[in-house]
Length: 268
Image (cartoon, rainbow, N blue to C red; front, side, top):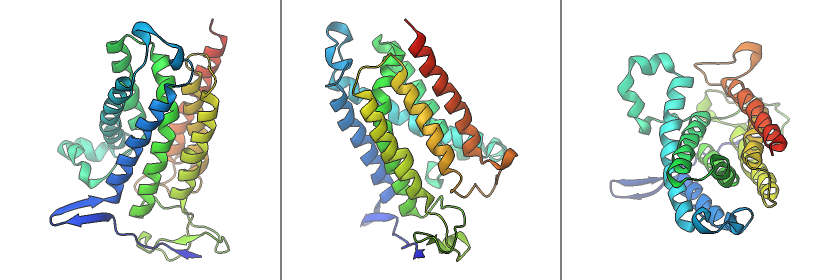
């Protein structure tokens, strides 16, 4: 079995200024989205649009800015409402304490949807066209975030079979037994694998909404599977049917994504 190496969360210290690895992973996520967004402009249907409906690099940059706001605000509010509603209702000012940690992907997704709605409305573009543009650039950001989770030694996995070759001991988890390095599982599943599948799927022109639907469904399925190896939050544990909060939040994503894909397929 392996021992978690206890990586210093501070990547660079210059006097009182500390640059954390987790912050660098966020920068990497935003940089990758900018790069992939510019690449998306070369593929249909965006490459064939002209006139007022044409997409430009400025659109990609504006989407990134709005997306960052959506991720931060939605991710924080989602964590407070989905995971610790009673605590934050009693301590509302601590919702603003981002430095204490606590972000939820599903809340961040809702924040990004709000950002896309704003962009589509102000630029007079179809919402599904905007969503299809954004979707393939999201998994690399998720991969960067999971890399940050591993560096921080947080969100470790459930206890693993001692014979598992890559079982890892996270000493700060309070147990010296090997665990699944679930951060790396999610890095590979929700990040790398989902990106490859989605990018290949999106290279051909699809019906409006189908690329976004493929992302929502694919993420929901892969996250649901990964949750079986991730340690549930200590303050929640497993819920009904022995499923975690993350799994319950994935079910409407899977159903909604599949419904959107079928609706788009049947739509004229």
